[in-house]
Image (cartoon, rainbow, N blue to C red; front, top):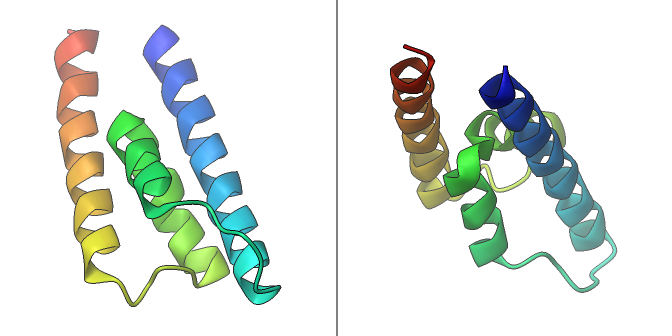
Length: 85
């Protein structure tokens, strides 16, 4: 149950951060660093990132983000099922 809650929170935060970064980009203001976005994916927010890319049309041209997000989803899916037993 903890892992489900963890992934819901991390992906929710990642989705919101993706939207906030897009909002800031449209205003030509200070942005969330790419390293922060990558860190959120690595921490388990790959699904939130992929949904954020689709909904906000943000970072969709950067192949690096797509690859890391999909890889993150695969790795965290494996980890989830491993630790759930």
